[in-house]
Length: 246
Image 1: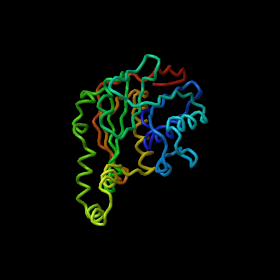
Image 2: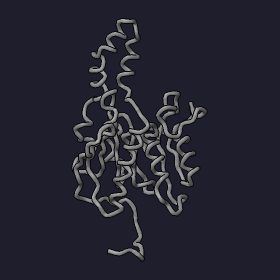
Image 3: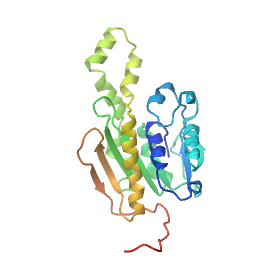
Image 4: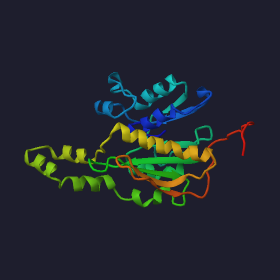
């Protein structure tokens, strides 16, 4: 699990609900370079008041270990030179808020990677976008991940009446830009998005092809839209059940 903020903690929360017979045999690698801040208390599933200034990876690791899982912690950014070792998990669930780490997903070496993105701002914060890899399009060629979408959204937000009024009242311009670039996070959106992310490897384990892309709005009742894949990645070995029937 890469990125352990709003989305990453949603991954971990949903993962704890999976029906493992022996949870200790499931090793989860947790990667995040950041510390918990006060704002995370309202958006993180595992954040407690005394967790402020603790590393996010350690907070999530403690929660998963309380549930019986085995964890590894990586407290560094996902960088262009990052490569998965054969002894590390082959399945990746990615919940980051920047485009740069998303663009290198195809190069890391995961057998199957699921990236989840959320909308930004008060209007589209319930929108969810899922990409899986490998895919026909490499992660560095995904059209939605080109340019700097967050900066474009920030520029548009600056023209809204609320921001113009704040500037007129003497508000700091840098603070306004930072506010405009920050995604609005609600707990239910992260959990819905995490459920969709975990559904992809579960589809594969049940003999179905993953969705290459999937979009959904947690604030509306419309069905999701997806692009089905044609090749099934290898997620794990599942022994045949002796009592199973065709």
